Image 1 (spheres, rainbow, N blue to C red):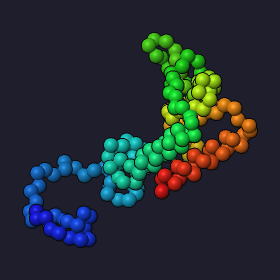
Image 2 (image 1 turned 30 degrees about the horizontal axis):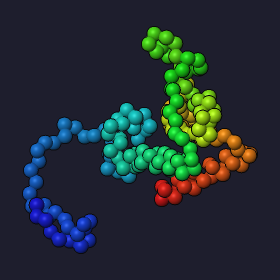
Image 3 (image 1 turned 180 degrees about the horizontal axis):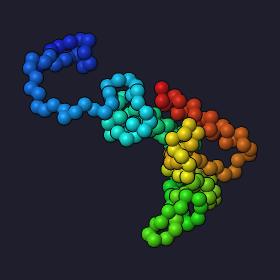
Image 4 (image 1 turned 135 degrees about the vertical axis):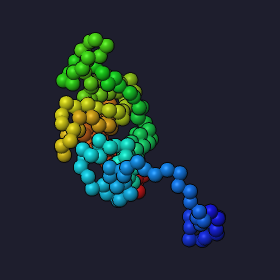
Length: 178
């Protein structure tokens, strides 16, 4: 190709192709058309072919939005004097049972107990981390695993203090996502 000055192109240049050598051809077509804006396929197909479906710009965008929300949550709470903690995800009692090193264990459903203990140490704590539920994951109302954004505050005057923190976080994050 030849590099050509073009003011309409990003960075003011474009490559004009003179010749293409095809090195290989696909053995078969992809199971879904990833170059479309929306993948017109089922959730099951998207999950079965996840490494392919994530090449679609709209499917990838979900992860970028999730990343932005977590960044906004962290940045806002750091500015408000919170300490980030990381709690255990495998416990000894609960509803989500499994065998862990030949002993019964559970996947934690909430960091609540640990957050309440740590408020006595740091006053304001938060965690971003996985949470597990024994529910069908492909319904509109339930997820069996998700990323939880949790915070706990000590020494508040009323529930309005918590509401103000939540409102502040949401405003900050929505501005960040713009």
